[in-house]
Length: 353
Image (cartoon, rainbow, N blue to C red; front, side, top):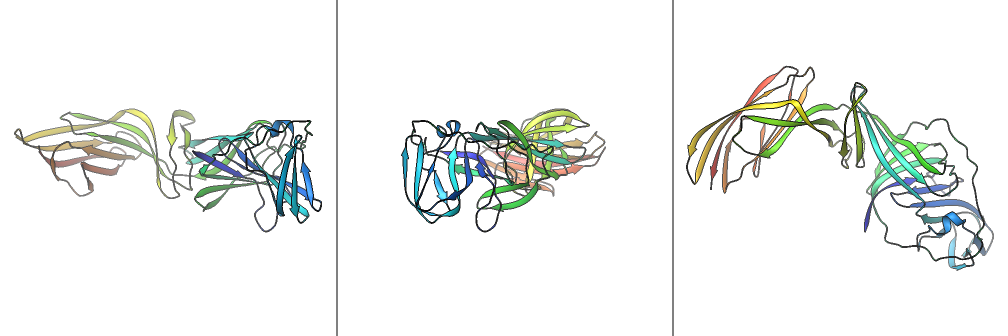
């Protein structure tokens, strides 16, 4: 089953192995890399009690040497290999996970992405670099072999940073999105919230109507905001604030850099358009309507309008003005109204049944 996930890569990029502990954290699991100094021939690992039961089968390995075999016995894993010296112990654990959300400050034009990392390792994790990577990663493996016996406890000293450093957008690669944090604060046991993205955006207030044609005198719009994705964005909840006040929560879908992002917040009492529908022909097999829609912006800020209408008939003939786009079952109109501006939109539709 595919797991919609984030990856947190905690590594120093470059040749060779990093000197610090690393991890790749997904929604429900993580891959951890621990630096080790290996003697020649073989080395035995004693995972602590909190970690042993969370290991994912088939994911324990040594990086930097050529392994020949492994032996699981008595609460330990013995690795046999060719080579020696600096290497890394790598394994997947279900004791790290994440969730995420965004804060959108409309007045400041600021989007901040937050990751909530759940550290259930029962020890603090000190990291050199934290890279958030969004994408889909399949995980089908089950639990690692059950190891009985006395387990040796391990721990890391907690070195808490006062504030997380500013993130740097690193681009995309390999079908995933990455965000980098240098010298992140220590991940303490529990839930750690860290910003993975801080960027400027230009949200535009937006009204949208999307529905089937009906002989009504008014159309009601839903409200929201439209912006251009400043980076690749993983889907998540968005808190939208205007004048420091929460005006709603919405769900942001996965978005590629430069694509249109829209968050919808419900109905707007001011979001109305008036309509005049003139019946030009009304027969059983053919009906013709001339429709005038009056769009008015009563706000003191620009409003982006999206009007999408569908028609149900065997054949549809539409006479649309410039600026409107024909769709298979109707049309789409997109425009921006200045503060106080009024525009009319006229079209004629012929429906054959």
